[in-house]
Amino acid sequence: MPKDFLKDSRDEYDVVVIGSGLAGLTAANTLARQGRSVLLCEQHYKLGGMATWFKRPGGHIFDISLHGFPYGMVKSCRRYWTREIADSIVQIHNIRFDNPMFSLTTSYNREDFTRLLTTQFGQTPENVNAFFDYTRGMNFYDDQRMTTRELFDKFFPGREDIVRLLMEPITYANGSTLEDPAISYGIVFSNFMSKGVFIFRGGTDRLIELMSADLVHSGVDVRINCDVQKIHVEQGRVASATVNGKRIKTNCIVSNSNLRSTIFNLVGEEHFDRSFIDEARAVRLNNSSTQVYMALNPKERIDEATGDLFFTSTAPVFRTDLLLSRDITSRTYSFYYPSTRPQGRPRCLIVSSTNARYEDWANLPEAEYEASKQDLIDKTLDHLDGYLPNIRARLAHVEASTPRTFQHYTRHIAGASFGTKFEGLAVSRALPEQVPGLYHAGSVGIIMSGWLGAINYGVIVANDVDAYLMKAASKPVSRSV
Ligand SMILES: Cc1cc2nc3c(=O)[nH]c(=O)nc-3n(C[C@H](O)[C@H](O)[C@H](O)COP(=O)(O)OP(=O)(O)OC[C@H]3O[C@@H](n4cnc5c(N)ncnc54)[C@H](O)[C@@H]3O)c2cc1C
Image (cartoon, rainbow, N blue to C red):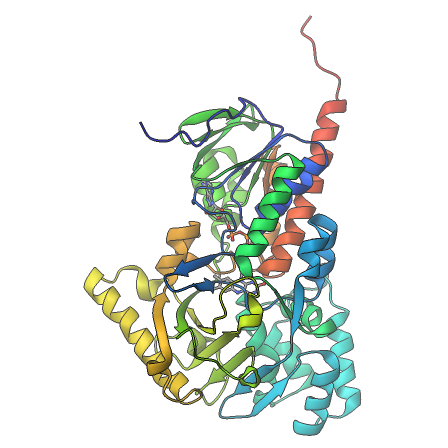
């Protein structure tokens, strides 16, 4: 008999959360702390979604998406998780750039960027301050017509080198491009500029272990290997969900699954207004990525001055199409030192990441797919050898992931690394107006993605759900006469 991963679950919960990405985990935890009964269903055998890791023999543990987030994580983790989690967040200090336009190292905050822009890029302090103040003043309700390209043209016309310095890390951090609304750049950039770039000491495995313990402490019924196959809508509102073939009653669902899968696969378009469906169909997915994971031999060390995050490119200018091309010109390396995971075996690891299009990988026949992965590895090692000589001989393990890998493990359509583009946010927020009791929390709209965005969105949606349940409870029960 197959194992029953829903063994001893209840027949009914106040809320069912679909998916254990950071938004799903945080929504579940917040709601349970508010006294709600919560069932958290994750189809994978591990919690965390994109916030995940994998192990290879020899004590090598690779993080998938632990490259950097803004300081705001400390406050969010302290408030909505635990002090222990918040206290494990540490700053990384060496963010390096090397491309045909410039080579530099920065601590990636306003002070250091002001120094760079005035001394190395010849800008006046007044212009740099005006740019920082303008971006910091941006908020979600601003005019969304200005693109990031137009924002740069306003302050640094004709300066492709400055565009590259300002844009490259943000494209990496949330997939946004020069064609996206300027606020999607301004908000995220300002978040980073407040204090710099941070990571979680102990690695993603430790983070998720601490979060799992807190979920249990809060009373969430956490279930892995539990695939939510259908959200059932009756009389226009959420009534239940089918999980591993079992019907669970609930008036409220928070889906952390991809926004488009939630609408079109889990609920079904017949439950929404025609105009809403048109809007949902027009939501663009974010791009995906490829990664190459490299573990050094146990005794090999990399000098920490090599950097924590290293943005490299051979492209003469910064352009979105070049970033996405199969013919890779830009690679971002994350270096992990023994200090990243003090509780583990001392190891140095490197992850190379590159934006990628799903279409370029999706339909390759198996042999060609494997050959393309090997080619990705070979070219990455050739490139890295220029910075870390003799790298091949120093490695104990190397492997690659592609957009197909991300789709396989998280079910994100087209392996989107950051959910949907900006317009997804309005669609996500409008779900409960369409189907009362239906909520979505997860990577949408650039601002609400990434580790910090996902956690914060989880809290926002949990509070919406709590208000909805409170209102529903206070309504007099209608009696038939
Ligand atoms: C390569 C890469 C590097 C990244 N680097 C960074 C970084 O350095 N900094 C940063 O801040 N962010 C980074 N990100 C982005 C960040 O990891 C994500 O934005 C964030 O973790 C997404 O969280 P989420 O809540 O949207 O859910 P996701 O992580 O997308 O998880 C959704 C979950 O729902 C589950 N699910 C889906 N459908 C079902 C179903 N029907 N039933 C049950 N479960 C289901 C999935 O299995 C998954 O676990 C990176 C992402 C990638 C891919």
